[in-house]
Image (cartoon, rainbow, N blue to C red; front, top):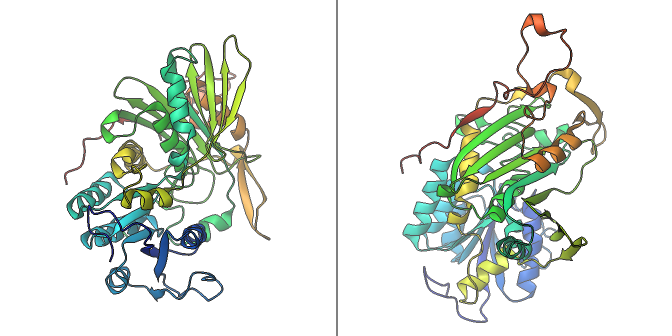
Length: 422
């Protein structure tokens, strides 16, 4: 028997599980499910894919049912848990279908392309009485409570703000992998596949978590600067400045056009030091006045394993939907912002990409700009970046270097919109 809504699973009984989206990033989930199945925690009973998986892809996982009909697959298999790793615009429909059937969820990030769709998910989860874990794996890091404890005890003095930097590289093939890749909308439906809302969404969510601002009501304003070097609809080089309910400041700068791709990180600035967190590595560096640098590697709790532990009555859910409301306010601000501005050709160059015969675009000096933003919590315009500044009047074009000015017209500077009606 599968656990009903609000009921713990029988101890020692593997939970029947359906995976929706088993290719692309879904391959990681398939591997993780294989690990947990071998540990006796879950049992893969269904795979929802447009093209069935091969025997080699399912090695060690038995012969689960396969169908492109997610709801029908849940009904036929009696699944207790569904892992949803499908295109962003499909998340809400699949989550609602699972919740209506009493099926608990691990929903890949970003949970939805708009705040209205996010509320639709949270309403369905509440009505169905099911557990829903949002797949921000970095929020399972044991470094997060350790960092918050250090800040609370005054290890780096009074907190002054949280910055985050992400410098990654994606070639042009990345934007050809799916029809929705690099799009803001597709066939009239929101997608919002930008650098800060999808590939480096963890930088935003982790910075907000470090700051202690997780709920939607914790965010009062989001300022955006959205640009694109690639020939896409969405943004690949962006900054968001977030004001929190208690008056704190969180700044996140990210690009998919890095010169030398590196590990993304979050940094806590204090009056007497700083704490840097490389969240993919669970690595923390504490630098404070009067002490030498201290580096610690932390462990991490897998979010699917945590969901299983929650359903068996052994763990608190780490990333319920409510704890990603602040991140979704950022997604909503990006969705409502003016379309990203294309960078001028003098701002970038093309170099060989990861795939043979494919190029990738590199923004000149972007690695240093992203790092400077994390250090200062300033956006690209405030840092004086020429492509982020508005054009000077014609009589000033030969007047020499320009001082930092107000953000470019592409930037959106407004309070967070009122919560959309349910």
